[in-house]
Image (spheres, rainbow, N blue to C red):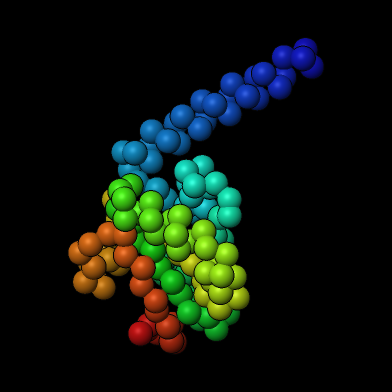
Length: 139
């Protein structure tokens, strides 16, 4: 019945959200899910995250001639909350990010971000790294 449909969608949506939250707690946040993860926890304004693997983000930044800002996330803590609320929700920072940078986020609980973080020598999280992609490399 039409009256039951919205309730069913709400129920299925709640189940889906609960599953996503549980899997993120166990497996970490996938790069393609960071924007929604951020919005669910901190609300607007929300930065626009690049929703692709790290290597693809490097190529996108190279193609767009932008610097790549990479956020390596490990777990929610006071430093993460400060980074999100004081930096990534700051209107001036958001404007600059949108105009000049490609923002990518990776949870170091996941394989690819953990390997990139290791290659960059990162040991404390959260870490923000600014990279300038160049053909076949980055600096």
